[in-house]
Image (cartoon, rainbow, N blue to C red; front, side):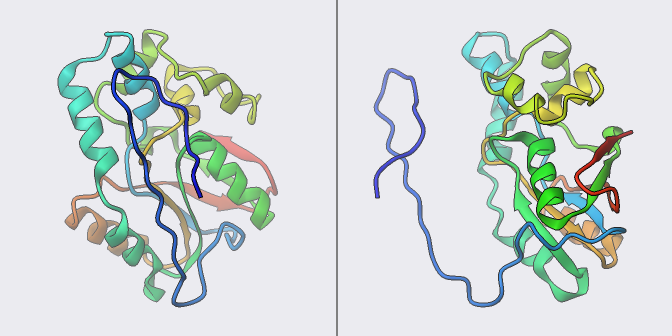
Amino acid sequence: IAGGHTTLGSEMTVGCTVTGRCDGTPITVDGAQPGDALILTKPIGSGVLMAAEMAGKARGADVAQALRVMMQPQGRAAALLADAKAQPHAMTDVTGFGLAGHLLNMCLASDVGAEIDLEAVPLMAGALELSDHGVRSSLYAENRAMLPNAPETDLADLLFDPQTGGGLLAALGGDTEVLLAALRAEDYDAAIIGRVTDTAGQITIV
């Protein structure tokens, strides 16, 4: 199967996708339960940083750090989140629809809602400063239309920033503080960013 994203550059780029079979029952987006904690394993902001890089507006150190985050493997994080002690109920990755879009997909599939603590969401270095200066990825407007009532601030706008190599978002019923410590011990900039609610299909940003 050949396909993929459209890219623009001076050199040809070849991308590959590997698929396989799951050994056990997969954790999907449709099992989140009210009261679950929401954990994100990587900071967001890659869309803004890459848009700024293409326009020559990003700091080199910030771009280099963003690339390191984007390339960080997720296998160990997935194993920790899937451990039975964490009581994993739903999980997804954060990519093109942004954090808010993928969380909304989880909520709709699980017939639940969510509350996001905006100050708790980890950000890539330089992302908020670029957002403050009006830098947006090309998919931003389409992503934001999914939650038209969301706050209109530079920080909230990053919830709709499309991610490349983004983190995992999981709804968990277990001891999240122990899990968070384990993720950080593996060098993941993970955070508890909110909780699952019983307001089906609604996402509240506080």
